[in-house]
Image (cartoon, rainbow, N blue to C red):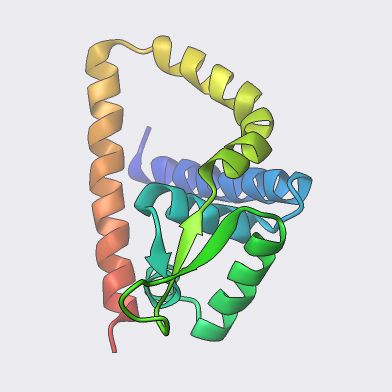
Length: 148
């Protein structure tokens, strides 16, 4: 398989991933991007709205709307900093988030685990290396495009 075919497969993977996450998000009553932003909160833990804005690239106004939508569904909670009441932390309600999304991902997760089990350790190492390096390239590109 040549580089062009791999590039096309990578694009198809990205597009298919977006479609699946949009479908999962809609089923959960959110948009696909909103549901991925919840993933940031679960992964990183509590953060300020400004930190979430920086991480997502959204404006602070868009982040406020995002937090409002999440709070309405009891997926996050705003918590004032004890030392400065002007500073607000967004705290994910991991239990509610997991109970909302676990059933929607269960079949996908099971099939993905079976797929990974079909590869040898050597093949898994190659896949891991590809993803780690691809992530690094995407992060570099994002940083370059986001810098002022």
